Length: 385
Image 1 (tube, rainbow, N blue to C red):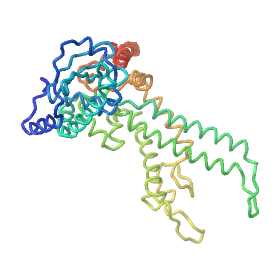
Image 2: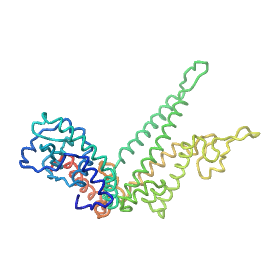
Image 3: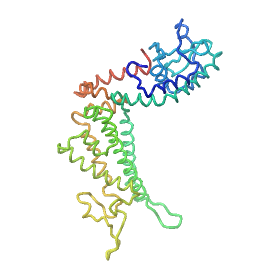
């Protein structure tokens, strides 16, 4: 059992069950390590469970020996089966079981793999406990998908602009309909542009749901796994407030306007275009059919009579572009560099120990930190130990 974690009494039966599942797969005592390190990868070993589950099982739960790191080897655990020693290694090309004259030992290695698979299943409560311990220490990385999510938003915005421009150029074109009559091409293109705009706006909110949490970590507004979990489950408004102080006039104005757009968009898309306030209804009158949601109920919103949604797409996208510039202004600019110029995860322990505080001081500080951190991740990925 790892010295970092003391196994609680309720997991002792789990450990014993995992050990029984391994059967004759036991810790090995190596006489000639050099020979084993030169062994070949087995085909049967390719069916091992994920490398971290195997490591947790053998090293952390069952106290097998880890020989440590070597060139292109992250960890190496020797095991014995039927009197023969094998190495279970996490190497650059993946996890595997290695041995001399491996072709003659494939059947035995297949048995080892089956035993490990069974033991991994028996150890599931231990894995859950181990993850809980890491979360309690906030020793976690938060995946950074900010750049990809933003690229999706930009892709849809660019398609909207292209479609809108095409609609203007082809405004006078028309096509003959099969049953007679004509349909103007420009009208259809404007309709398609509107669909793209709605998709782009939705993509923007999806990106902000993600990026606000990451910016809040980089700004040290949240520093624990419990806070991240709570914020991830919270409404968009709470994520916004984790980054911005609504006492700031500009932050409050953007919050109010973006909340309004988000409400109308979700009201439209999440309720089958009916809305919560009768937006899809028209009432009978001497003037003809009139929308139930009349302009006086729209307040300051730019409402269009007969529109299915209470804002102009062009206005909404223009506001979003303004906000994005505002988001990455001032002291938040280093966060944009980290989140969009790299695919590095956000490491929660760096928020707690002041590492991010130092990196967020300036553009130069963030550049230096990113170069250092990227080099570390590259070496780890290449297993240059």
